[in-house]
Length: 170
Image (cartoon, rainbow, N blue to C red; front, side, top):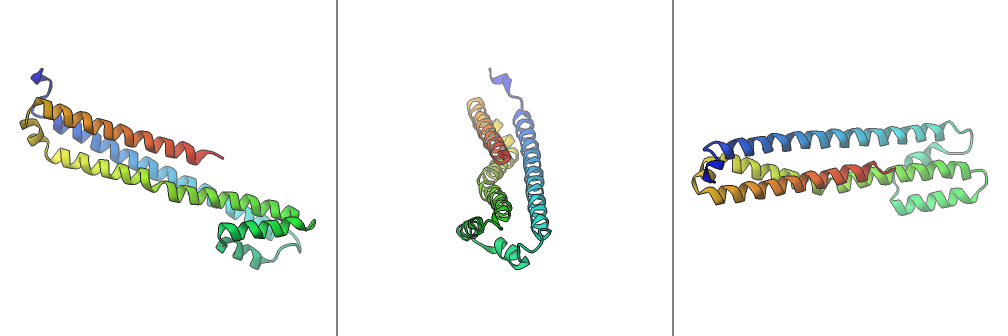
């Protein structure tokens, strides 16, 4: 049973996980950037639609809306909804508000999965650095550390996949 791990097994194992974690981080960052650009493009389209509406909206309202808190945005939308001339505008502002909420969700909720993955990446780097020592302390220790790192990596992978699918919900 002790021949299961060679002198270089831990080195190869942790090296492979380190590369996989680095690739996972880059994929997640690319996804987040793409998603935020898509949402910002949608917001810009909504702004242009508002600017192109004749005589119903002031450009100052559009620039103020971006700086409003979520509660102030809701009050602004409710005020615009009451008037029959601006109810169509209120729908555009509501859609803009929902898009801003998605952007906030992605910015806020991406931090923990990425941080956890970075910590796992650090553990893999440390284990890679100590791979000869891990091999020298015995078969069961090497097996235990390898299984522990496998569980950490799979947990990080699962958490990031959940984050990606939740942020894709429309």
